[in-house]
Length: 375
Image (cartoon, rainbow, N blue to C red; front, side, top):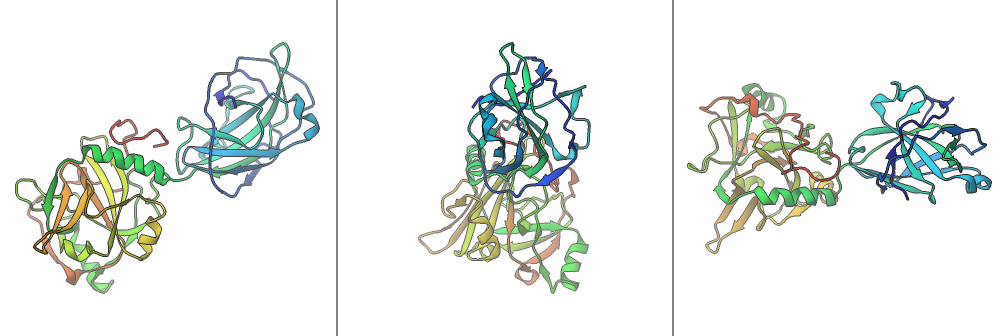
């Protein structure tokens, strides 16, 4: 199939049914690339079928398949398809750059379903509208076109395990050497811990992960967990004195949360327009709801041999925990945690709000932590 390309100067009739929206159930995913640009042809009147019952399937974070129904007796006249693709939030705006000149993808007519792929115009977890126009290129280079089809909607998918494995491999490159640690810790304000005591039965409860990190992350807005840190200062081996999240810190021995029955998953790799890079890992007790969610979506790590967080039992029977030095680890533990399993104390340092990653947006231009799909 000819890769879809932006068409400029293709005059075509405005869809009389514009604004009518049909919801399409999402199924799976796959697609094609853009190769050239259409010339600036004119349009001639010709009886061409209108695409009906558009179906979107095989949806990925940067691709989809599209097919539709049309009169089979006219297919020999068809040479091209015009596909008008817009982010849903812009669907009520004027979609014509100039009068009667829509922005659209142009593809040679190929057997359906047709694959549309391109990370330069498709982003993960984004709602789009799409409409189709049938075209026939004439001997003089002009195009005859049909009316526009009804508009349908679809939403692109999260990163797949393949994309996450690519992020994992990039993160491994900069992880650095491993440092020993002995506690996980969580900083919050004093009111948070008081609420845990008074309302939640002295427990910290999982909550839905925010939208920080990669836009295509399957964790954001879906996985429930409790954020912990484990990074230490290389010269002391202790947690840092400062925190962006609050002056009160809950510390818990590493062996309480990271047990032989804990599974470890890689979740994300990102930065926020700074030199710091963050790696999100998930700690999920085997068979827990969090484990069931992650095992089909995230790359699982060997807890004794990976570049980020390890648990190794020595010959003397002592368990040694280590974390990567050159990335900031954000750990999501998927189950409730009793305050009695650790201790809460006030830190001596400052609350560095500028380092907070709450709902932080990933830098899409960073070559260290981005892959060649939607950001």
